[in-house]
Image (cartoon, rainbow, N blue to C red):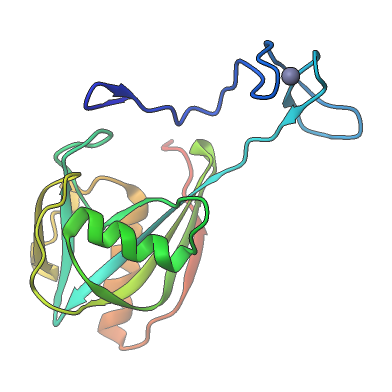
Length: 191
Ligand SMILES: [Zn+2]
């Protein structure tokens, strides 16, 4: 994957040892039960674990803020503001940062709403409910457009990711019942 001509590596494959530079092999280490990337030159074991994608569902009265993606994957499709959590930050900080970066929007978090495992791509997606603090939002560098949508106007066929559509479906259901409930679940590969 490329962004502005720079290769973005998010692939779960390791070729070389980051300790000694030798090629690694992929096998089950002694005392373990899953294959890992092993360096037979220096003995290092390189563990690769799922990534966290963290975002918000920003609300303003009866409307929800969505961003049209300016980058791949799913360029041109609508999403909730979200992105990869960085080392050294909390999940809440990641949610606020991504909302600011993608939508130039300031929000107040009001609790974790969905935690969705996506094991076939080794990801976990977390979305917080959030209240927009003002209407002074705009498209950040990773967005083509940012807009508020009423329920009837949500572009369901043009949503970028199933974790986003699932989160929106839970939100709208809970909003109509007046009782928001934290949801956790798993998204499987399309059949
Ligand atoms: Zn090594």
